[in-house]
Amino acid sequence: MAKFKELFAPKDLTEGPPWKRIIEFAIPMLIGNIAQQLYNTADSIIIGLYVGDNALASVGSASPILNLLLVLFVGVSVGAGIMVSQYFGAKDREKLSHTIGICISLTAIVSAIIIIIGPIVTRPFLKLLNTPESIIDWSAQYLIIYFVGIAGFSYYNILSGILRGLGDSLSALIFLLISTALNVALDILFVAKFNMGVPGVALATVLAQAISAILCMLKLLKMKENFDLNLKMLKLDKDYTYRLIKLGLPSGITQGIFSVAMIIVQSLTNSFGELVIASNVIIMRVDGFAMMPNFSFGSAMTTYAGQNIGARKMDRVEKGTKQGTMIAVGISTVITILILIFGKYLVSIFTDTKELIDFSTRMMRILAVGYVAMAVTQSLSGVMRGAGDTITPMWISLITTVFLRVPIAYGIAYFTRCKAYPTGRPESVFISLLVAWTMGAIITTLFFRKGKWREKALIKD
Image 1 (cartoon, rainbow, N blue to C red):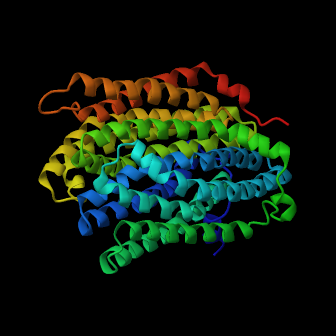
Image 2 (tube, rainbow, N blue to C red):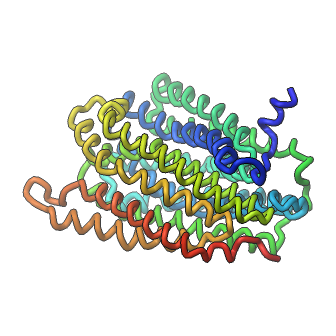
Image 3 (cartoon, helix red, strand yellow):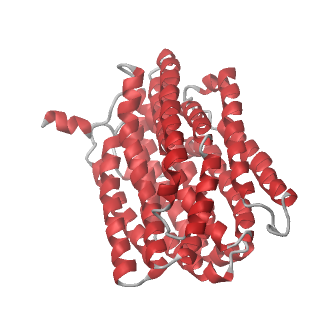
């Protein structure tokens, strides 16, 4: 019984073999990220099968706007993870308690802002993106329901981020698995049985996310041996809030850069028509799973680096960085090979339209090699963020997504215009993404080796 409880207890990553601690921490996160990706994938599969390809395209057109408005929350989440891991590694109970309390209060504020702003800007943004009239109503309905119920999503992510900063990635996994199963069940109920269409999928996701958030909060309330959670700690403190925003804002801006680039490229994607829009949705769903190991190891490296830097064990940070990156690259290589071999079968899960399957398979093979590059980027960026350097990954993202991907995508589309492709070849969207990923890995490696992130290795008062 004692060993069972240890599985769900905070874990000290400052002792033991680095590669072993990283894997132990990353595996529950990987499973959890896969489960979270199932939210969107289950939506896509059920919509594609029970409603049709246009409904599938409507969810895809909504995604960039959803990501952009969630930028407010991402900053709070990343800053929280860095501070929690470093204070936990330093065994500083008071600062850890203040950080957790302020995160909970800030999340309430951010959620309220999104609930107000989201529904107002939904339709204007969709029109700005040249969303086809055939799918704009469904896209708007999906987004509005999601924004109104955003608190569940926000609180699950911030609270699970706190749990991971404390070294407990297993509890967040269990809660996510529960909500994922609930999400799939509600998807089938609302769409297949009640014929609610796209709004039914959004409602199912919102309800399932709220359950996962409640479970995370209950878990944190039971961890009194590690920190204090009371009204005093929930009060916004200027110094802690500033520190949290200073650390998290660059990551929020990074997410914003990604989202803006996606919106700009989505406008190009929309110009190619419903087939390409639907294909892009399918590819991004498969891409979501393929990227999971990279994101999982990136997050694991952030917590690992944060705890060891808080404990002033830089030798373990160096050793763990090499081992963690090698493992991530190895896993991504295997995934790339599997996509190249079985890509067509993966696409067939979402649709039985032959033209859509063939096109999506070709586009997915363009992206496949890029996953290895992203393994390097995510791992090294994770270490830099764990040290408190969130600025460098932000600038790298700005360079690769705005100054590289967007011009390349539109440039290829412009120069490939012809009678068969009046707006250019749709391959431009995916070739530009591959180039951005590859250059991102090269630039990240150069900046990491330069080593300036070490200068920000401790949160200073």
